[in-house]
Length: 49
Image (cartoon, rainbow, N blue to C red; front, side, top):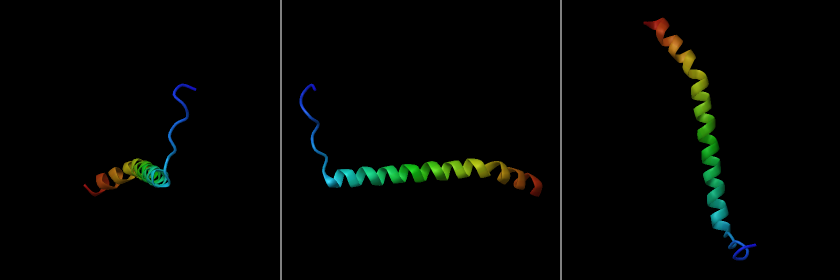
């Protein structure tokens, strides 16, 4: 509308953004798993002490 259409995105840029998105999703899943398991780890350590 203002200034014309956005510039075309190259295939390399699309691939780089997809790779960044995959890494971000993996980090979120890893963090969620760690947060889920952390109470169990704390409980196990407390039982050892």
